[in-house]
Every structure is written in structure tokens, then in C-alpha cells.
Image (cartoon, rainbow, N blue to C red):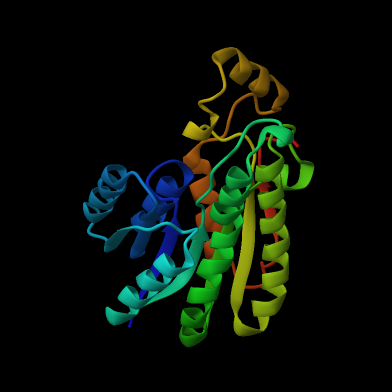
Length: 242
């Protein structure tokens, strides 16, 4: 059997940086994105240029049946997933009374339900391997909350609770489960901010800047490398902001 790391939301931003980091360290990776097939293939080509195995799949992680199809395809190729990086996520900015039911259900499905789906489907692979690692990408807003980002904050709070609970469940099986609570990271998700708003934001951060995707990727790999006694933790990277 071949062992791979699965990274969702890997066509750009944090997911891309994590995929490249794991590939640089010699890990075979499965990169998943629901859109941007061109960007996803660019990441795949970059990883393959490192002489590292990479499988790129355009899959909607909010759709359980699509993930089941992916799982079957991997098993048919004798591939087991022994590490999951749940990074896929979308945002909604606006007053809660203006948010449609469709938008609410979509953000819950993409940000939170997908974490359940990948865990449900691929934890059996880790049982077969005898160990495993799950890293969920969360946010400082999962603890502090954010005005006009109620749904997003709710999903990240859910991820934090999911992480802590699942870690307790899986610790006897030598599977560690942790989350990274990101502060303001310089990604396209923050492109809605004007230059003035970005400057106001960075003024609030003791480090005086946004974090980089490579810094999050470095932290993710450090967590992966740590012993299994590090589990059930929500590890914050925010430049001292919160």
C-alpha cells in the first residue's frame, strides 16, 4: 500500500503552501479543490517537478458522494491516506439578517461538514496504518467571533470543538488531531479589504503585519512531525493579535 497526505482547498493560499511544504519534505500528496482546475494543475506540476508523487482531483468537499468516489478511486490504486489537512473554506461578510439560507447552508457544508466527511472516510485508512494525523485549519474567530462573519466564526468554532472531541476519540489508536487557528493571513480571502482597511488591521497586530501562507505551512508540518502526545490542541498563529 502507498501512503499519501490529503490536502483540501489546495489550489491556492494556505492549502497550496501546505501541499508544497509536505511535497518538499518528500510526502506523496493528494491535492483537492472544488474549482480552479488550472490553478490546481499548476500546483501539481510544481510538486511533480520536485520528483514527488501528486494526485490532483477536482472534488467538491461539501459533497459526501464525491468524496466517496475519491476514496474508492484511491483504494483501487492501493493508496491509503494517513494524514488529512482540512483546509477548504469559504467566507461570508455581511449582516446575519441579510444572509440567505442558501449561503448559510453552503458555508456550513464547505467549512464544517467537509471536515466530518473526510474524517469519516479516511480514518479507517489510519486504523489500517496503525497511526495518523489530522490537522484542521481554523481561525482565531472560532474563539473570539467576528462581527459580520457570524457563519464563518460559527464554522471555525465548530471545527475547534470537533478537533478536541475527535482527538479524545482517536488518541488510543495513535491518531493525533489538532487545529491551527489562523489570524490575519495574507490570502485572497482578504482581498475584499481596501488598502486603508489592511493598514488599520495590521496596526492592531503586535507583529505589525499579516502572516504568510508559508508560515502556516511551516506550523502545519511541525505539528505533523510532533509526537502523538500533542493532540486535541488549537494552536494559534496570529502575530499576537488575539
